[in-house]
Length: 325
Ligand SMILES: [Zn+2]
Image 1 (cartoon, rainbow, N blue to C red):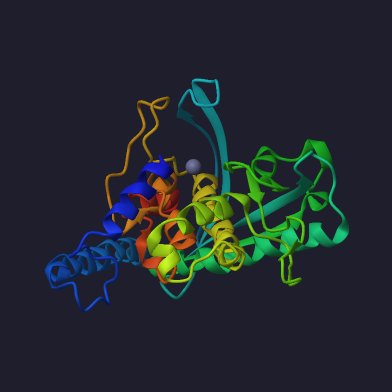
Image 2: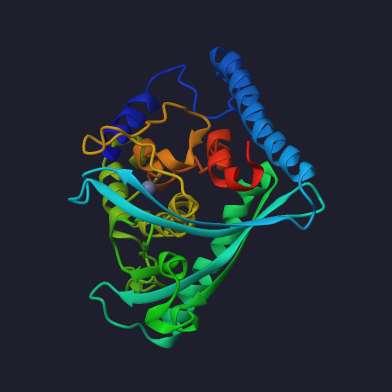
């Protein structure tokens, strides 16, 4: 799926009059749709913000509700018809017309063989995951929501193996290696072995093999050679976006922790609602959209957080128990 999107993107790159940047001056034909897209984004965010503000105002400033529920997604993709999930978080009102979503996330860190990591890598991964809350809040704050989770090592989880169901559901495993992340398992590829370039320059902790492969394939095309995008440049190029992808992956997977379901098409999940929205794309449809490829392979086109939003339906699902709409 991602590969197909990539090809369409590359083909589009060579077509005249195709608009990639809203700042592009040589793209007159696109101006009308750019204005429409901007209005679309404003209205989607405004609807969500109105919902949160209205809810906050009608409740007591110190009002709260604990969401603690089982739910399941109808899907056969993991060999089972229903994928069980448990959601556990606190919705807390504030006196500033905003709503906080709070809880504790327990983090288990292992390497790709399931073995324990050294102290330094473990601390790094916990810190890295914790820091993503700031990036996630760049999205949530648009709607008057503040994510306020504590990220703790799994050893701090109460009652050992007898932890509450909610605590178990909020226990996430971070694997230092490559793979496909899901709501409970996050893969971080940023701590690969140090790379030494032919010139002797050492690049710590990267870059990701997937990005390298794509970048090297792309560099064989005339366009990339013409702008000096040779093979060695791929090492530099692939590190930063991969790091950013970790927080974007988490934005999506954390949506599941807050009771949101996937919204990308999958033949094995025929009953799933599939988001057809674009610009902004639904965060829960990211794997379908596949735009992660763009900043990885096309220099000069950087990832834009305006491409992504949660929609009013997501806010209603997450806050419904408190806002009782
Ligand atoms: Zn998902």
